[in-house]
Image (cartoon, rainbow, N blue to C red; front, side):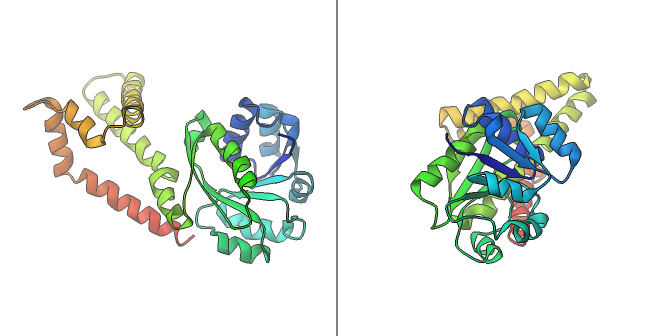
Length: 266
């Protein structure tokens, strides 16, 4: 890919993206430049990935054909004010901030630019991310294909309409936290019943990993897979009964609805 890729912000998500695209050979380290106000942050990505680093956001925009805005959402307004006059119409911008709509981005930049709004998640750090992408009208098919090749380097990616982006935040962007809580709770119960902690985490995490893989690879409905585990008068159906009694599904649904609502207000 004969382009240079730039990052404004080199935190965990940016690092996950860098790792994926370098390992997949989409960009070479010397074709990537990252800006960060933190000297420690710059040092970390330079040592880990071998990319070029700078503390100057403007330098990234001046050197890179594709720019990923990977700072936290609250820093977007200040960063955009700093770089907006330098962004060229043929540059491709990729955003990863929840709540920052294409219309809001257009207003901040003050003109139409090529923007792909995305929402990745932290499993990108182990190459198993799930990312939603939404291009604006200025993005060509070639631009979108380029963006999707970058985003697919650290997991799966799907193009979605912008009206679903807040839902994406709750179902994949934030949901690793729910899953981590589930794994922790499962391990705690196993420890309470006598299993060593490290072993409990291994059993719980592998059970979640394997179950997710079954959903993705068998094509069966989750309810059908659940029924396959639930023998009549057995242990699993009793556990399911207690989960239903305690409002397990309702708690998940209400948590996700709250997450979606907050995302829309960011």
